[in-house]
Image 1: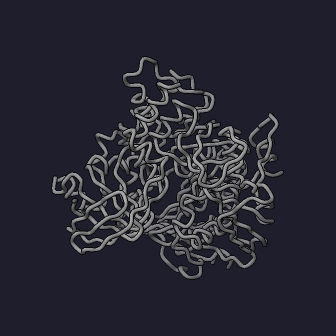
Image 2: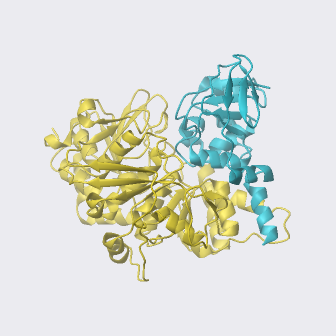
Image 3: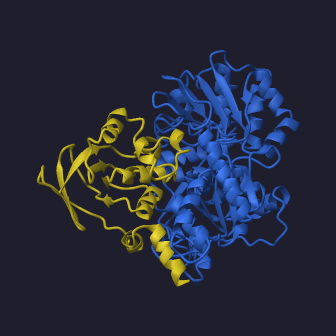
Length: 430
Length: 162
């Protein structure tokens, strides 16, 4: 019996010729990523060495990446002190893949890693962030872990006791209609699978629609795979992956895509055709509470958010700028834009998107997680409603349990910003 | 025998268990004060010492879905709670095991606040309703970490051997 991509990667990383779903392995880690919660990782890491006759040492500092993004610049003394501790640790342990609060190389971890070429096809990537699944877009096996598990990885260079997940194959055909795209596809899939439908499983994306999708769109699919509970979402690497890594991320070394065996065993096969897919919206307070935009059109919106590790990339900002050009954000609506990295922000400035968005009345913030998880800025008032291109809408997500969050694509968000109510972007936005 | 102190539904997210705005608080000694912070009534009972150690939270499917924030496990561990749920989200389950928070997967569990449950390796017996519910045991891989006293101790053992 053949292996899925997840199985092939985990077999290679565990030094085995083959593994199957359910096997327990201890894969070597190619990249270990943390953000501000590195402060907790450091705490747990030092605790491992308590009472041991040896100095704490990170197994391979070159394989550790730390990106400040959740609260940048620091919103409180507590965060600032945590960030300071992390900086001191990074200096002491010679961790060079450190992205501090800077305008030249900062951003959200799930964009900073791809655009710097830190993730390669076939890699095992772990991150202390559930959306680490994003990096499966480059053909890697990437999954979220807790801080203590990361401390263990820093010490040993391997993840202990990993169960090889069964894989669900998602086969996607058809061409998106205008104003419909990857975000609508993944929201629709999460609605079908439910929030726990892929729990303890991996998703592997195939089909002509995926082959023609740029890396930015594949990152959206893999980013939100975890919202169906998936351990990892994977797009097997192909010509587009290699193009992205060489041309946009500057990777020079040879790269080898990992493809599934022809007789790989899948837990389930889901076939989808996007030809007639409508823009989708996830309604409060669950990501799998998905409806076509027409079912919620007219819902008043107090705050529109475009950005995040899901939809803060250049093509997302281009869609928003196109729709908002020569229009204004509705008077009762606030619009906040968070580019996913400073590199994207700079390109958006050069291409005039930022000016267009500002002319429309949007506030373009610095790159970072922003209001997505309610820790930093852009909190909602009591009874307010947000429409956001981010990835979660759980109760209290944007900092207030007495508010509501709807999730959507950049096209739906931008069209709705103009009208101030949830709007189908296919009708010229109005 | 232990008492059910709280009953919650399906898909209880880590945003509900430990809201994001308290994530700058990281130390397991400090996180328990924010357990279910947006649920004023239950947080008040926890803070007011009205929930006994060993008290049971009974949950539905996919308990702990969402973020990988470990605070969601450490805040419950700090109150010495035991979570009995129809199912757990993968990352939450792993964090719980890594920190030594007691979690019991019981796919058909039904209980009301105040019920007395008797938990063994194979089943949960609701002494109040008289009903019995099978338990899905932790995988051997997770059991090994639990038995070592959590992942810090487990990793330390590995380091010593290496």
